[in-house]
Every structure is written in C-alpha cells, then in structure tokens.
Length: 176
Image (cartoon, rainbow, N blue to C red; front, side, top):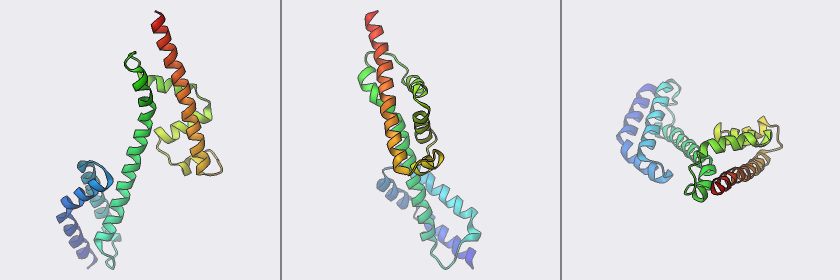
C-alpha cells in the first residue's frame, strides 16, 4: 500500500517536472539545468529511501521539503563561491589593465602571509565552505557572530596585504 502511494506520488511529481523546475529556477535565480539536476538528485534520494515513506503524508510535500532545502543549499554554495571570487575581483578592476599578475597565486601567497587565526578563518569559510556556527565551534569562539566579525577582519587584512603586494609589483614595473 505504502509503496503504491510512493510510486503514484513519484509519477505525479515527474509529470510536473518541467513546470516545477521552471518555477524554482526563476524563484531561486538558478539556471534551469542546475534546478533540474537537483530535482533528479532529490528523486533518486527519495527512491533510495522509499521504505521510510509514511503513506499518511502526501508524497509531494515530502519531495518539496527536501527539494527546496537542496535548492537553498545550492544557493548558499554559489554565494560562497562568489564571495571567494570577490577577493580577486576587488583587485582586477584596479590592476589588471596595468599588469599580468596571476591573482589566484597572489591571493594564495597573501593568505599565507596572514596570522594563523585570520588565515584559518578565510580557509574555513571560503575554501571549506563551513558556516559560522561550525567555525565558531572549531575555533572555540563565543558565538557565530564573533566568527563572522573575525572573518571580515581577516578579509580586511588580506585586502591590505594584497594591495601592498600588488602595489610593490606595479611600482617596481614602472621604475624599470
């Protein structure tokens, strides 16, 4: 009985796949292909857990809750990637026309020049993708707001280091 309701719900959900993906693509400002891939992943995840399906609840409600949470996670991940790339793009506008600097290498060296606690903040948030709560737990900080504040201080320091490094490079190139 429960498996029959599961199969019916899955078929109904798939019959509305294009409309659902189009709606959520516009709602979350994500490419249609990404939303469609998440839709497929959600369907596969639920299919693997079909034994856990409670026939007293609607399948679509179960599906949507997981689907929307996966979309929110994807949106957060893409926001973190953008933030990580902002470190480089902050300097591109000012210096890219004058130099052939490999910014990714400069950012890597700049991060290594930071104090250990600041370096850890940037690595944990931008590269490992940890949220503020996990960072505050790992570093034994008071709360997630302290972690966020320390992260922005670290970014400010990294920006200062990069401006110094790139400025030295430009001054040396102009003098030559």
